[in-house]
Length: 338
Image (cartoon, rainbow, N blue to C red; front, top):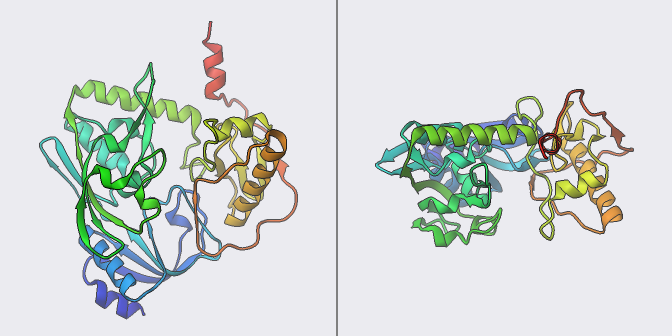
């Protein structure tokens, strides 16, 4: 099968077997994939997807590895790792292949050219393709932060390989964007590249927004380099942040195996000690049960679960004490309030 895949895909991709997926995800969990295809450009990406579809093989596309949990049993099929990252500027337009990282690659390059429109999303772990998949968003600049800004606001068009295997250029309306969603959630279209229309702006102002947003995130989100996570685990419910409900239920610091609810952000679970997907499943189920019992709200996960999962970790949760010196954003705000 490996030789068949290599022949069909052609140049620009490397096919490997039995590759452990944990290192390719921000949560650092996941067993081996039967086949792992590294697509290094948009042409190779399209060829790889056409090949696995033509062979009728199970597959999924892996980008930055955020917002996804891969089972400890791995994936029986083909994982196409999107490493297509070419970026090209043409005046106020920038075209990026879908495997390019939003930050630092695309955002830093745009800022260095005094082009504004992407700086708001600094620090969010995502590829360009992932940004369209979830309609990447962040709060408008400080100090007001009066609204949410979405990637759809600067998207000009995107080139796709549709689920019908057609190459197609589409505009913004095609994606049916919403909060944390797009048409890509229910259609098996593959983003090959996206083109954004930016605006010339004062470079100092662009870098100021980037600095402020990075500082804002640092107060609220654990550092992925030291505390691996997938980002937010649960969806908002009836306009209420899941983290608020989890915190009110006293669940910060709750731990199953190597997975712990962050003391910094209650809607983030961190892998603090070689945790497994089974540990995560157990902790997610426990949080859902406790929040439902204490508040009546039933939390839904917003992350994608892919692959073969072992039975959830058994036993009871334990509590990890809050790290000494940790200050949350809410506590910092309270200190400076009148």
